[in-house]
Every structure is written in C-alpha cells, then in structure tokens.
Length: 223
Length: 223
Image (cartoon, rainbow over all chains, first blue to last red; front, top):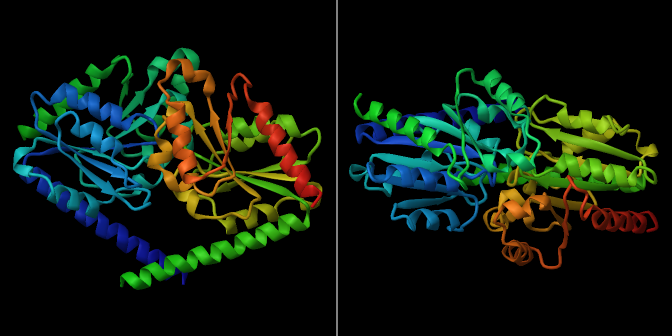
C-alpha cells in the first residue's frame, strides 16, 4: 500500500517537472524572463511586485500571474490598477501553484507582447518548494516580523533559490531580529545566494533589487 | 482516474477524523483539555504558548506538542526551558499535523499527570485547516504585520475556530492595519468567534485570553 502511494506522488512530481520544462521552453521561445515569488502570508509579495513593476514597466512589458487559495482578486486588482495584465489562478483551497496551472495561465496571455512574467505563488513557506514552475529564477521574500529563525524552521523553501529578499526592514527598530543568525541560516542552505534588504513602505533598498533584476533580464535577452 | 483519486483523499480524511475522535476520547478520559494553535509562520505561536504556560502553570499541569517541518528543536527547547514537557513531531517536510501524529505524541506523555495539552501546529495558513486533531478548541493566531486582508485570502483556516488571537498589536503605530476590515472578514466566516488582541512582547491583552481559557478549562473539568 505504502509503496504504491509513494509511487503515485513521484509520478505527479515528474509530470509537474515535465510541464515546468515545457513552460520554460515556451517562455524562452518568446524571449520572456520569468520569476516565481514565494513567501509566507503577509511577507509582502504583492507590495514587492508592485514596486518591481513601477521600476521596470517603462522599459519592459510585464504580466503577473497571481496564485490564490480563495476566489478573491485583492492582489490581481492591485496589479491591474497599475495597467499591467494580471491572471488570477484560484487553487480552490490548494496550498501551492504547480506547472500545469502556470501553463493554463500563460495560455491566457499574449506572449508575443511580453518581456517579463512575474508569478506570485500562494502564501506558504512549505508546499510551493516542491513544485517547479519553469521560471528563470525562484525568489523567496522573508520579512523582519516573521523572525530570524525561519530558515532553520522551513529549510526546503530556502534551498535552490536565486535571491532572498528581506522585506519590512523599516520595522527593525521595533523588533528583535538577529540578522547574522538569519543570514547564516540562509547561507548554510544556499551558499552564495543573492541577498537584498528592502522596505516596500519606505522604498529603502529597492533599487539594488531592481537593478540586479534588470541586469539578469538584459543578460537573458542577449543570450 | 480523477474519481479514484478524489476517493483516496476522502478516505484519508475520514481515517484522520476517526483518529481525531479517538484522541478526543482519550484526552477526555484523562480529564485533559486541549488546544490546537494554528498560524502563519512567525505570527507568534510559540511566544503565545510560552505566555499561556506562564499564566496557567501554577494551577495546571501542562504539556506541549510541537509540530515542525524540519528536525530542529528551537520551539520545543523554549518550552522545556520553562520546565514543561515538550514532544516534538517532525513532519519530515509535511505541511500540517494530523490526528495520527497527535496520537503518537500523546503516547509519549504521562496523561495521568496532565490537565492541559497545547499543540503548536506547523506554521501554515492553508493545510492545517483540513485536519482535525481531536482538541477541545481550535485557535488561530494572526499578527498585525501579516496584514488585514488575510481572512479574505485564507478563509478555510478561519472557519470553525473557537478563538482568534491578533498578536503583535504593539506594532500598530508603524503599520497600516484596518482592524474593522480584518474583524469583518473573520466574522463573515465565523460569526460570534471570540476575538483577543494581544502583544506577547508587552503583555498587553494577554490576561483576557488566559482568563477566558481558564474558564473554559474549569468548565470542562467540572463537566
């Protein structure tokens, strides 16, 4: 019984990875760069996406795919209010986005008219780690009020990421947050990961993140 | 294919609910009251548990079951430092506790010597909602920095709970948080839910929570 159950799960993951590769090929074919943002609920995924859009939308044509567990369009509405196309994927209570969902989302976008697709995963520090989507980079957004021990408690999500953004640094004066302990936790899991400290509220640190991202995109477009 | 997959999931849930009832009966037999704390990562579950222990441990014999996705004992260590027995359940990357895990945890405790078992679920606003554990009450801990829109975005976890504790109210001066919007979201899902506002940092509001809990436990013990 147990063996057969494990086998089914493996098949599902393999199927997901295959479709993730197809997503990756399709995006590459259209010269579209893509990002998968993962974070706990309330870390500031949508705020960071809005700031990233503001910094890049003069030069790049952007679309956003929003993953939500419930049929509410709070985040997608905020994106569309910036004049950016947003596709909402309602997982129907599901705890993560997977590659087939992204394939469905991409099918609803005019890929010929895009340079960048930003994906906001479901707010969850566990399940999204197991499902590749086919994006160029995976980015985790942490936040100061979540606490400095999160890399130790939720290690899987911090593994294999390309950048870690620590948001809400404006709250540092009011919260005990041991930054060297936090960074050590990230680096054990992920040596050499790019680390950005930002405040989406004050704007502090955002340029370093968007400059790095711009360079990545330019490099990708010239490949 | 799809029908058979759905059926398997239903069977798992039914098996879980049956074991949750067994847990409930076993706890009742030993006159032990029990709480399932659920929250997003970093909302302050462990801090609230420590404060609850401090308020109740003179009158009640308490044990804690800690759910973690990784084999780290950060939270269990903090509980044991208070002289309280703590059992750690490592879900091995799993996103929630389930009733069989609690059964295993209870088997490691001296139930005859306990009045209260506190369970700290895995930090996740989605998956724990689907798995009853057999506790007397289910409590969600939210926190001000998570934002006021969480009940709308993660409705399942807020349904069928007995109390909602909003933690980190000391951060209100520094964060935009529309409290009436937040409470409206909770009440739509869960009319009449008990609502507590606390700061585990300053201690504000904790007495209202622990007084309410004490009354619930006394009532249960006298049943």
